[in-house]
Length: 312
Image (cartoon, rainbow, N blue to C red; front, side, top):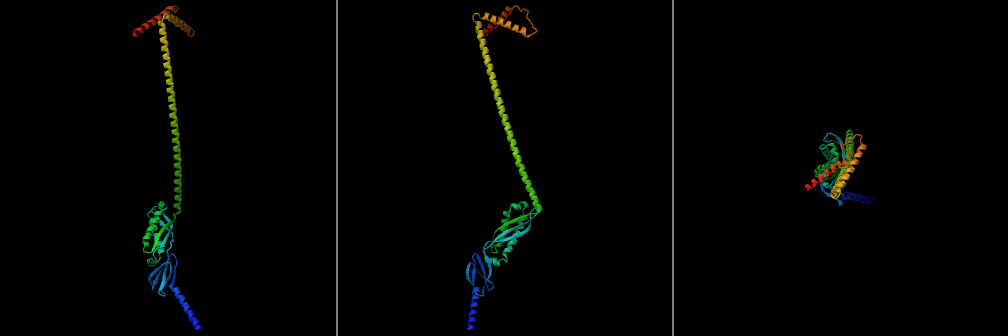
């Protein structure tokens, strides 16, 4: 009886060992590489699988998920001979488990080392100022170079990201001083542009004011000139009309006698004014003979009248 129990126990243990050796469950997004007697046999996908006991074994296990690898910080020299410390992140994914198992010993280490050498090469071709501006170009170049080599490694480089670019302290101080100078320059330019525009606006305002003032002065003078012209014309017209009326009256009956009387009155009046306003007088020789002076004036007027008629 005891021997039977021992045999049953041994048989149970043997069956359990056989099941453990032959039954394999592969998780989702994973692949197992199976070797038979040390030689590649097949690749198992997700699910339940049964192996040949003592002949097949799981040699490699790979996850098909995207994997991120931290690229340690390294010192690079830029084109303008400035040393900077740069680190990054590399994103990989296994796409061929067989190639990953037999194409290279450690694809993660290989990709990390190649990323570092490629990064140093890229940084050496550009100046320090452009390293901050051309991160996208650097990332694309690293991915391109690693992807070429990774074709035989059974993995694909999805992307590379530069995480930090740390220049020396002295360079950082110089860059900060440069940025401060650039900001001050921009502020000065903006201020000078504002002052320039303000000066232009003031000058334009003064110019417009001068133009308007000159236009107003011009119009005022034109108006005054037109007024004076109208005044002179009206005075001339009035004088001409008065002269015509006098001439007409002189031709009428009694006109000559009235003119003689008028000339005599004016002569006496003007002579009286002259005596009042001046201390020194130049008197004609015949001051008492007013009639002869009037007749002389009227004779001159008659001659002028006859001359006008002949001319007409």
